[in-house]
Amino acid sequence: MPDSEANRSIMDLGRPYLIVLGNEKGGSGKSTTAMHIVVSLLREGYRVGTIDLDARQRSLTRYIENRRAYAAKKGMDLPMPIETVVAKSVSRSVDDAEADEKARFEEAYVNLIDKVDIVVVDCPGSDTFLARLAHTAADTLVTPVNDSFVDLDLLARVNPSNFKVEGPSLYAEMVWKARQRRQLADGASIDWVVLRNRVGMLHAKNKERVEGVLNELTRRIGIRYIPGLSERVVYRELFLRGLTLMDLKDAKGVDGAGLSMSNVAARQEVRKMMDALNLPFRQKAKVNA
Ligand SMILES: Nc1ncnc2c1ncn2[C@@H]1O[C@H](COP(=O)(O)OP(=O)(O)OP(=O)(O)O)[C@@H](O)[C@H]1O
Ligand SMILES: [Mg+2]
Image (cartoon, rainbow, N blue to C red; front, side):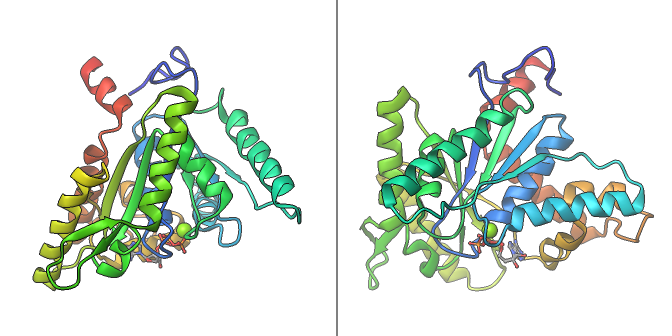
């Protein structure tokens, strides 16, 4: 567990570590994965802030609000992040809107600097200026994709007859530019992790092909790909109570949401995902433990 008070910055960055959940593809699992990362880190003792850049849906923020309401209703002491929302600018001039959004994104982050160890940013499922800002600032960029060529289409152009990668596509090019801007800004690199979400048991051939493409992409566009969450009803059900699988022990006996065998397996896959993210401050904490 980190000693947050004594060690203001967990990575000696002089600022919180920034994890960004991004993918221009809507519904790929960004907000669900973000919430599981947030709660896993809270339960490990880190102080976590969130910035929701999807001010229209506010899925991550609503998830957190549901959590606060549920904890209050049940008299439970659930660890909570500090949540913030940054909305799109209403300015009609593109230049003014971008300047306004940049200022508000930076303000949201700066406001969290002394209060948290990690900031988790949830991007909308579309290409926006705010999302680009966040991508450029990321220390770790997490991109959930479903096991389908529809999702992969934003990462790579794939030849339909032999399933070979022909080149990067829209979103990968955006991330490439973000990495370039970041290099120029402070020489840092962005660890880009593509995470497979809603992995199912069926369609083994499709899964194999998707894996082949992702393997090729690790070399061609510098991603790391890791297993994420399986397709499970429990990930959808927990939203209304603001809980994640990492909380279910607490909820046991309160409303019957105890741990079934499948929940135990699900919790294990969340832990595996967290480990595979290879967040450097967690590695450091392990070494120091
Ligand atoms: N592993 C999973 N198993 C089952 N359902 C899932 C899983 N991951 C996400 N979902 C469900 O899929 C839907 C989309 O997930 P989520 O809102 O996390 O995606 P998103 O990428 O944030 O979407 P958007 O681009 O609209 O912001 C939600 O209904 C969510 O509950
Ligand atoms: Mg979302």
